[in-house]
Length: 311
Image (tube, rainbow, N blue to C red; front, top):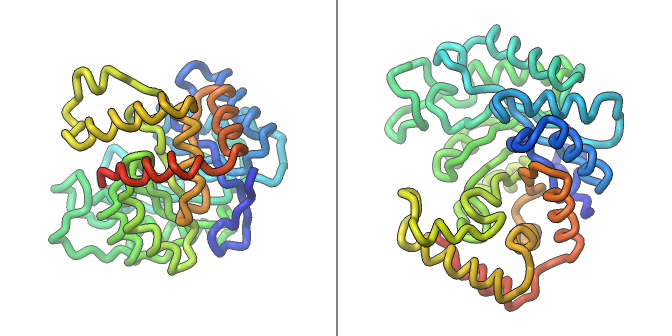
């Protein structure tokens, strides 16, 4: 497994990390086995959140990593409060963090991030909006109470690095340019068809911020799902339908699994420091690690995928 710098933090980690969003998709025991298989395969980055698996993801990692003091990085998040005021409450943020540690069975974590920092409530106490940050709104990003809480936890040694995560390349570009953090995680914006992350990752790179990419397999990119083409859901635009059709055809022509193509394509990208894989079983994470060990895709296949960008 390739070892990479964790931004400019001085830490190092593996090019592939394990994400915790699907660890209980089959069962709690399978989740624990998946984490331990990842460790056995040499993976040293683990990412979770209070919202993953309805809260059980952190408990899975706590069980799997209990008593293990190996050289790995553990990341979790704050957020998904039911009341908007809690996004600005030091007490609510610290209380959630302490609960995270209890489930993780740790006294501290390596990385602590704001979950979906492209949400309005992190940066404004105006409860009128509950969705993404507003383009016309003037936010004081770096002075937000949530970042103050993260900085307090870092100063006290409860976490080593602080960061932000989000799902919108445009919105996260704005947040990133106006905050001082160590790490940046963007999901749903870099995979076999989507390239939105390319507009924001260079901003992080210029500032020495660790660049993390997640959700490279979402919406039919871990295995072919012909039903998406037969009856496209509302989120599939005409260009996406054609893109998926071509990706599925390339997968069939190549003889490689779709997951393997996705891993090998993403590991060839120069921008990310670590690619976080949302595996739900030992077999899934093993398939991804084995794909990574195969190295880059054949150049002709890589070129054919590269021209398929849908945004």
